[in-house]
Length: 253
Image: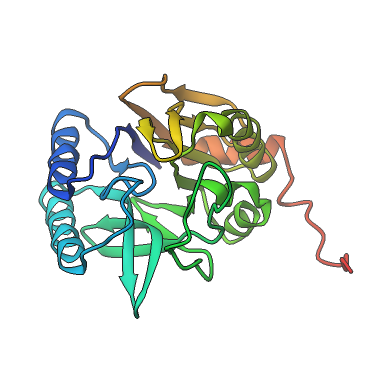
């Protein structure tokens, strides 16, 4: 089983329609099964005022695009639900949509996400025969999320991010470790350019189930593609038996 992923390291403007046009342009130029975009790409990371009708129209456009082309789009975007606004990664496909709300909001310099409500749990989706866990930026600092996905059948984790230069070392250190310790792919799609948090470092990267960088973007606008293989996951789990060796009898007080 193989799935081709496009990590779309492109800066979102403050114009939703412009960003949707960029999504379509990329899907027409680059062949993939899943197109992953940065955190809050749809509105631009700096946007903090959200029009529900505009977001609903954008969702319809993304659904139509996926149905038209037989693809999936994992979009970083705000979701307004029950009077609350979430920083979300929404996975659109011809089969429907799956939402993941960022669990750990970044409210430390240089970030400010106080307008959002924290998410309440993990979220997984299956597409093209593979299972994907969804993740957003600062969530990667909490290893239990990756471990949850791995122990619940995930083959890969799709991660949208808007990480500034200050976070480059952390992401480059943590993400290969998350892949290695859980023997899953990690697909990291970061923003590029500048925003409220400063300059984004780019560096979108696909990590193998053994934590090796398979494909990595530079600092500027770029679309990186990588093919995930179920056989590579099986091979990695024979070499590194971390998941098989987990013990349920240990009580952590």
